[in-house]
Image 1 (tube, helix red, strand yellow):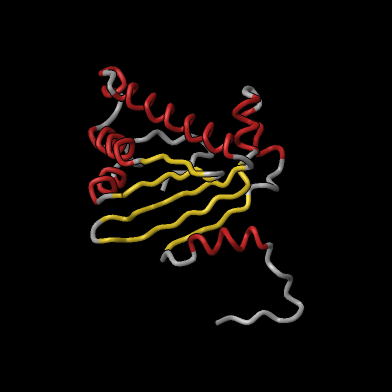
Image 2: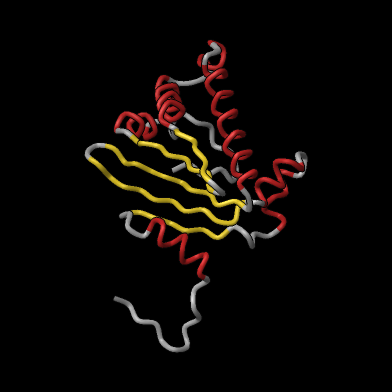
Length: 166
């Protein structure tokens, strides 16, 4: 157990609750989003509704749990209200359905490699979006097939200045 010195500031109880939520996972991250600079939201300025929803997210927690040959990843977002959580979950679900429709177009698939198709099909098929109270949850089981397809993506994707590709 780590002991804090008497001079160590106490952690915000809300932030500590977010940490407690995922601290048992072998892989986890906790991100506070309520103090991001205004510039972070600049790309959302064309849609005030989406910008308002993004600003309503107060924190993110990410947990990863290996199990057999899969890695279960859960991303939870805490919002300022139940209504915002419902709207964000709905927007994400509609976006996922839009991706399914886009991938059903032969023209779209013709622009992708087989590995890209495999990865995106698995990603969209595995992604589960739920909400409860003020929380939105994204759950994804990452499979070896997804990882195999993903490892071949960078060599085929065009590189643009400033684009990060691992």
